Amino acid sequence: MEYEAVIGLETHVQLKTRSKMWCGCANQFGAPPNTHVCPVCLGLPGVLPVVNDEALRLTALTGLMLNSKISAHAKFDRKNYFYPDSAKNYQITQYDRPSTEGGWFEFEYDGAGSLDGLARVKITRAHLEEDVGKNVHFDRFSGVDFNRAGVPLLEIVSEPDLTSSAMAYEYLTSLTAALVREGVSDCDMEKGMVRCDVNVSVRPKGSQKLGAKVEIKNMNTFSGVRRALDYEIPRQMAVVAAGGAIPQETRRWDELAGITETMRSKEDAHDYRYFPEPDLMPFVPVDEWMNSVRSRLVEMPLALKKRLIREYGIPAGDAEVLTNDWPLADYFERAVRGAKNSKGVANWVINNLRARLVQRGCGLEDMRFPISGIGELVELVDSGRVSSKIAQEVFEQMFERGESPAAIVEHKGLSQVSDVGAIEEFCREVIVGNPKSAEDFRAGKPAALNFLKGQVMKLSKGKANPGMAGAVLERLLRG
Ligand code: ADP
Ligand code: ZN
Ligand code: MG
Image (cartoon, rainbow, N blue to C red; front, side, top):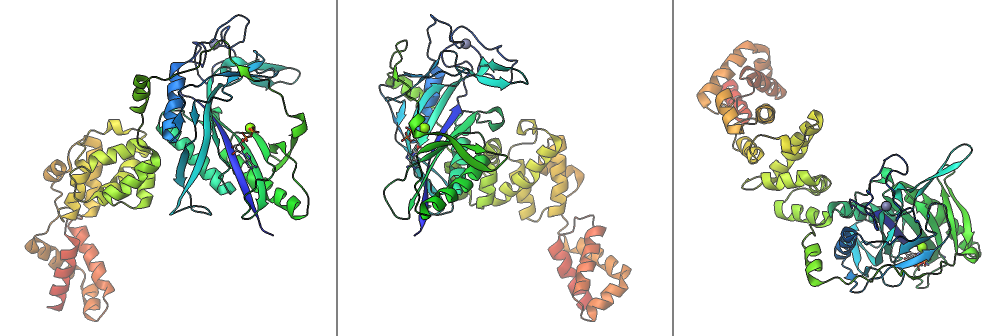
């Protein structure tokens, strides 16, 4: 009997707002403990929460991104539990009327279940809630930092459509890239902005019935998710194959040991006593509000990549590099306007411009040469006016002086020499200076011609048209 894995992910991302979800405290990572707190996010009695409008907008934006239905009547609920990191003893979340419902997310994935290298995962819902504080444990006591308490948190729940650890990894990577691109969240893993609950079960291959699921809680790296699944899936398969049953339970991933272990079984599941949050009105988006959210939607990474390939005919690898560096992609699209050789422009942007920027530690905004400069440089090479070696030099000058390539070629006299007379002179001089190589060539050693050609290039300081130099040398040597 063969088995297959079934995976559903609950992904929590901190929204990119200036202030917290219900109060005016800063939503800011890294401040000294308990410096961004107030009676509201400390859960003191008698305070009233006020909804952060930007958090609602970012949630709706995510819904648009994920092809979801944006609820016309989203409401908030209290989820009651006691834990030191939540001073209110409840969390405000959305229970039965989330802000968005349904939808799907498409991403690049080359594996089982993919179609033309793409996979589509259905989205159950995305709901808005608040983050909790952070417990910090010292030698003899523990403390709570409430700076994070009340930070807006969006939980994106997927359908159990994922079938492998690799697919889960790609989903998470692509989803967070899209969220960053849309300005929903910075998704900075180092700052704990993304956390994920991993639900996984196994079943006989082809079966429609879902097996009992195991939930691995609070994963904070994607590689951790992949490793945890690479442990958990074979574990479950082995149990089932041996005739055993997997109990529904919550497990913890032990990063050091590389194993999952039981945290709690279904029997000790919490009763959260959900009820509607009495201090907040349901949210009814009006058309004008929705339209202004819609106008913020920008092209998603996958769409950008596909379009770069289609529109400019550049290789997928180049499109990928540009997609992963959105300002560079934008620069490329402006630089390529009016250029004949878009592949050449992409090549220069990626291999020369990007490398130089990294080396110099400066940004695209520091570039002073005209936006059409790289296209013009490519054109100079393509038309044979400068050699590719000289082009590197011209580019250096463009970078340093902010001038157009034509101007640099002009006043530096870098134009490639394509004048037969001039090239003949170089060639004659080289033949006279290297009688041994000339003799070798005449004796039937073609490699000698390359050496002589190299000498012509050297003598002309790289300016001789290399194709012409070869042809002229050959003619003179044979003649
Ligand atoms: P809960 O109420 O315990 O959070 P849900 O049914 O809401 O459970 O599902 C939570 C997540 O678990 C979703 O991402 C869903 O796709 C996934 N899931 C549900 N059932 C299974 C299953 N049998 N195997 C794997 N994942 C599952
Ligand atoms: Zn506050
Ligand atoms: Mg859950």
